[in-house]
Image (cartoon, rainbow over all chains, first blue to last red; front, top):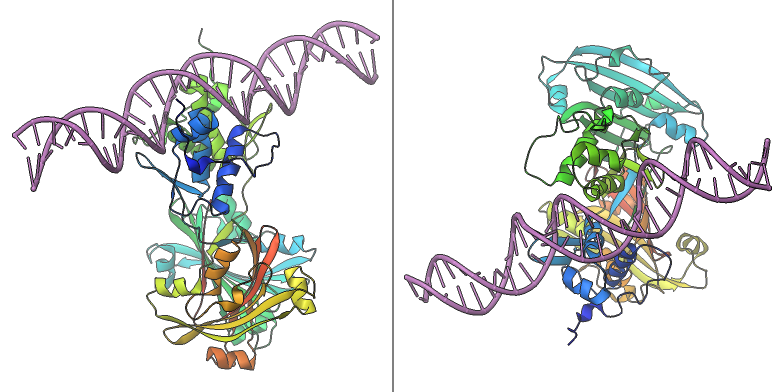
Length: 251
Length: 251
DNA sequence: AAGTTTAACTTGTATATACAAATAAGGTTT
DNA sequence: AAACCTTATTTGTATATACAAGTTAAACTT
């Protein structure tokens, strides 16, 4: 009188090595393998928790944990009352670590130094106010810093900071500590946006960065939020010959 | 005779709105708030599950779920026998979605088309063999495709493919379907690397991309793995004036 | 025929319990 | 003093149970 098990669950653990590990972890592997091998297609419905319980002989909470974690990882999608489905193929996204430039230089074993070209406090222009999401009556800090690796300019940093959110920004010494470090303390950033472009630098920028007028630059524009308020916008200009962004993705 | 509760847990839910949601979710919010507000510092030990159970009056499994999920999210770290700790500040990393170029154009509402400039099968050169991690005796496919958005060149794609892993690569029509789509079917990529640079295009590339010789390009070099074998290397060249990479990060 | 109710099935959450495994601290023995 | 054992604490896993809530389809009523 045994109920027939769902044929989708045949040989569920066939290709999963029998290493000592929790049941739920093995179940996750087994399901991930079914999907990676194409046996379970995208958007297809997978067996219900109850069916897995019957087929595998574990408790429902264990099955639930495996399915819940796979859902958090984007492998599956679930809908109450309906069932569990193989998630459609994820868009590949690369992770670009956005380092503090001084640490990045140090990690390459280079010597780092910075020159502060400008640091002022004033009312925001219309454009700055729009970018920061504030009024033109509010005050901002404005800084321009040139960063060096082994005495060669590696980054020209123009930054506009909401003075209300980072009131001590103007009294820091940015030849000792990068703005990034101070801002992380003053208003820890919770969100941000990046825009990466290849641009032609102006003549002034070429002179500052000590590059030929023909050399392109990698420009990164950044806006960072701290609890729903824009703290700072930055424009980072890197000589194309001395800088590259590295990214890695998996899954 | 009530045991005194851990003072770290005072006013745990003080700033958490009383919206209808599961207990474990509210607990996660409360803990995340303690950390974000600086009340619980990095690397500091947080109250044990048992202490939270006593202070909040929920079951240990519920506390465990909240702490386990926060650990999976990188907010906490846990060690069996020792306790739970506030994770040190994460490095900020931006997520750059790497789309299929045809979909990207379509999502902007543009019209897409492609021209196939080259498609051949031959033995790998030394450089190609090194990049793909194969021997020079093995065969590769080599393709050059020019992608258009609204009849303007938007990407020049040079690709080298491991012929052993994607044997049908040579018999596809890449004016109908991008290599990305075929490769995803033939050998689903599990990992990859990106290298983003601002470069000066060659004269030939300028002519193909229909840009001035002074215009820089955004170059993306990509290597993608499928189960520990390199499937393909690609060099994607975008006119600087017509392309930008967008990224977002949070936490 | 159309609308309503019911039943069956699904996932979601919460609890109580049990034991395993890692860690640290204290005490005991050698 | 060093090695060993014990104990308490902590997290990790697994189970059984219960009820809530969303979905679908069949059964029923009007």
